[in-house]
Image (tube, rainbow, N blue to C red; front, side, top):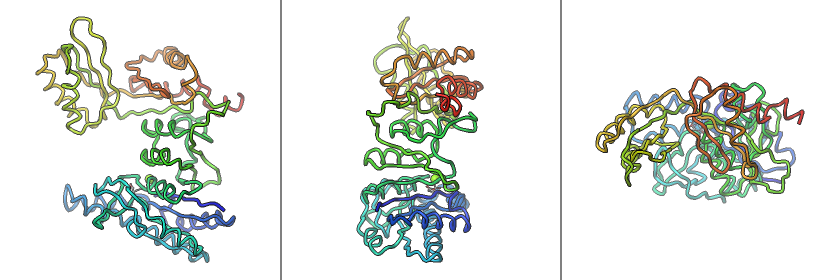
Length: 411
Ligand code: ASP
Ligand code: MG
């Protein structure tokens, strides 16, 4: 007998009919005697609807009150799901985050889980109940309702699985699992049966939005086996695992991630003296702007160029901040390019295989795609290219590295 935590996202509980379908699914999976803890999100669109209501009253509502408001979305779905289980003769009890005691810090709207009291849930399971817990929410030490940030139910589920020492945490969603790349861009993108936590973290942080990044970090840290699967299909989906060195045939490349929402900022002709990188980037980070890729080249004539990327929505503010600094330090020019995209190859197999980077660059060269920036980590190679070539780049890399259905079957 196993203990499984199952999390159902907003689309999976988007209507009463779907909630009833989730209840059927839970009952089917209980037939082998497993204990089940369920975590649910709010009905799809509900969190946005609640936030919009708040913003009609106040542009910047109090974060504490926002948490009181948005946490109601999940309170609705836990109760409805418990009812749907009762209707099917299954013992079930719903709980809010504060009832379970998912203790968090007090950072409203982006709280972090500190501790979970698993005893209450264990007692309910011992009585044969399915335990249904509201995702996304917790309570701070003073009894205030908190929420974990958008998409936070994934993190609730993983944290509960860790606290309960569950055998698996299953995240049910509206896609079949994790793919080699976005199937909307590459038709023969292949569903991955397994992927390591490290790879999943890279893919998630690079824009593959299947899981909240924090939930993957959490699962890796606490070694919770995590599975992503579809609510609407009968398929085992993708299992996210710890790296397994014994696996001989591990693929070199697991996936290709990409983002279009970045902008490239270049400050050229910066005097090459100690402290300039800090002078240029300090004000950007002080403004709370997230900087991604950073490159600085060698200096030939006593000056250097610093190039970095930021979220596209931050590019105008960044331009202003950096232009001011450029004048102070006597840099030659600041330019901002919003028409860029970043494409990344991700795979733990890169560690033991040379030549992946050059194969990537050759593939792009064969398509006459110019590479503007290259960065690498142990399990990732990223390039920044002109946005209009993004789809071509992803497709040609996907086929060059044999990631598709066809190639995989043939090989
Ligand atoms: N309902 C919350 C949101 O929309 C939490 C979640 O869905 O995971 O962000
Ligand atoms: Mg979600």
